[in-house]
Amino acid sequence: MAKKFIVKNKKHEQTIRKHNADSGIKSHFDNRCYKVGKIRYKSWANKVLKAYNIVIYESELVHIKNKHRKELLSLGLSAFDFVSYIVQHFSEIYEGKNNAKILVVRNEGVSNRAVIELSLEGKQYKIKTASPIKLTRLSKMKLLCANARRVDY
Image 1 (cartoon, rainbow, N blue to C red):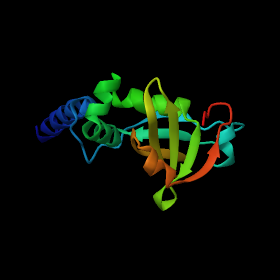
Image 2 (tube, rainbow, N blue to C red):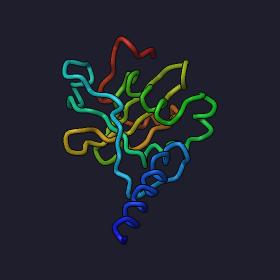
Image 3 (tube, one colour):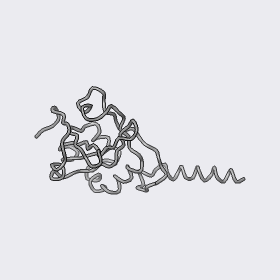
Image 4 (cartoon, rainbow, N blue to C red):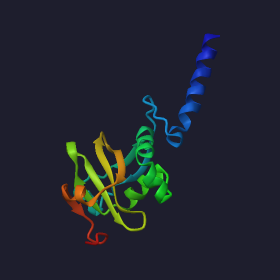
């Protein structure tokens, strides 16, 4: 009988955790991640980044949704859609703190400037955060690489 109780608790816990990113509740024991994109082997970004997958954990999606709610609502995007847009359309790579890499989109369609902070974790890049960024903060960072076909200065 005790085993049935434990199984019921696990099922209940899974249903609670199933929609954490949508509800904005952060679960510290949740280790689910989603593949957002990949750095291709023969791409311009491969000069700076290794050809690994880019993933995001659900706790980071909750963080992005909670901290940048106004920006996401004005853009009409969910946190996952915002992150995947940046991964698919980034045109610059900057160096961040603690050897993190910053992917930058300069586009009038979604946001003037939007960034994703990546850190290498094993053989994949983990997204730490994603947000719009001001030009003054971006100008203080070191540019590592840019896609000449996408960047308009």
